[in-house]
Image (cartoon, rainbow, N blue to C red):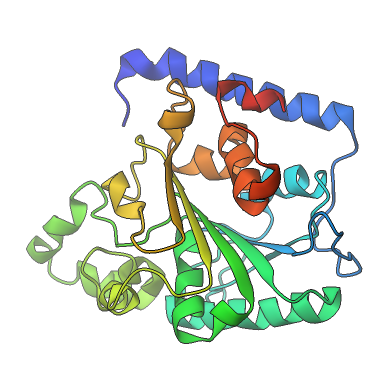
Length: 281
């Protein structure tokens, strides 16, 4: 948690972000997404698939980013994945390898509907990491041009060291495995994480961007989010805007500075420098 003396700064930054979102909304109608009649333009020839995080869904994770991209001319799609039986609205709970199979099917559906050759993927938290399984083990690299991970759990999280306490509480780890296997998969040192990262973080032919915040209290340490390998760009949000104090949720849901950098990653030819003033773009 941030020290209390930073609270006013946090509120100020979030206020600016929300004001920026409001000014964008008043300038033009908000773009729609999941329109399977959408046809990619010459300027943006690849559909963008948004992949939500753990405990989120295809709508609530993207209420700002999806219209942000659609208003900029992208065909934007989002999916629900990892649904547990009898659990409504909250997704991203099931084993991550099974969720990756759902992503594979959704990518094929989007490509078939739009006629595009490849997609770009933007994911938040688990959604920025799960597609790597699809790319590495389910032949996804043939259908994906770029993966942009926002606060992605790429190497497992210590949850601020809480996982070190598991051996002292018999049965807790089993409870996590039984009811939220996706959480167990994301712990540092899990079998899933070892398999995902064995032999290298990346696969050939895909461009990778990671956007992280130093104030992330969920995927810790935050530098564990960064990838190694060719065609990788690791970005720390505070290097773009030192006063941006967004944490794990804000960077993926409302932060227009991060969203500007996402747009740069999707269209590097037209990229413009990202700074604190990008909330007004």
